[in-house]
Length: 503
Ligand code: AHR
Image (cartoon, rainbow, N blue to C red; front, side):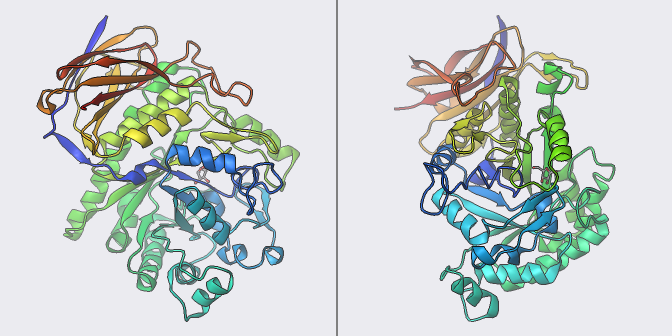
């Protein structure tokens, strides 16, 4: 059997992992809100119309942060439409997704939902069709205690206490021509800087995310980051990255190698942040917010048809990717990549959370179930908290259509507060098991090893409402361990969570 070797040392660490690495995203798009988190009349809806089955699945996922309300949607959104008596809120055309937004769920309702889901809100402001006035007002509305027009309006609307939103996005994908009000890097950098200034004047405790490129494939990628940060570096805290991968040509080895690109993307943005820091002679370091990431391609054709058939519909089933087993492997690899870069990637939001390119699916009036990609995210959110360890990994490599020297095995390791070490590992080989030799000498002895494996013989296998556990992790019998050297079998095409436990 092929061999790989992983050396871990408690003194070789990358960083403390920010729990916000396991964030998510809900946009007013498709059935994410209406039919996803909110469905009054559903047998499992609570007194506010929120689906309790969905809240249960979100809580199990352990989502500390949810980005809201967009996405492309936010660039045409008037936040004021989403407050006050629901019956008086306007319905508007959403030009981002060619649908109609009724504003039945707005700022207060979403903040309430987030609380029920044990999460917090990361709120995006509109820097497409709006500007700094709307930006400062919404911070005053959400976070100022009272005694001013906007804060008293919030109180009148039912929230006596501030909503206390600590993390804000300065627009969304402002480099993209598809964005309402897209801008050049300098135009965006200037408005982001002015918005950031006034928002922080209203509430100095907030943190702000500036829009990086909407993808590393954009023609302006790199120069966008450099130019816009040259304008707003001092007033922002994070730069955003967005990346979706797909396997439209059914080339699985190449698809599973996509995290080579992801890692390169992250390192490039880090370098640019640091270049601007150098140019400006600042001590402040910017970190990254990977606030949209996932697999997205399955639903593209279906969405085109739907738009032709039903323009301006409400809560249409858009972007409903049905994820298969190989997608779960890539999601696991993406999480491993974030853990490798935990020193600079502090926030990551899987896009999205429910129904829209999501780990959780629902049927209107029916059930809620976990897609394949739910599992690696849930397991990493559960065990990937603590310190990210530097992995000294020796493994054979292979070439794919777009990548060379792709490691057959990729792995990340996390030291938990309880002294356990969790290894997340993917065997990219589709037809060969690999024996992973783990050398964790400096940790002393472990007493028990647990291994959970996600595998399916069919790379295209999916979960459905009728067969929700078709692709789900299986726990292998726990092994006794009386030392720190261990040999672990990684099955062909598998996601593995290996827990080294001390008792
Ligand atoms: O997540 C779906 C869309 O992808 C978001 O609205 C946008 O920001 C990105 O292009």
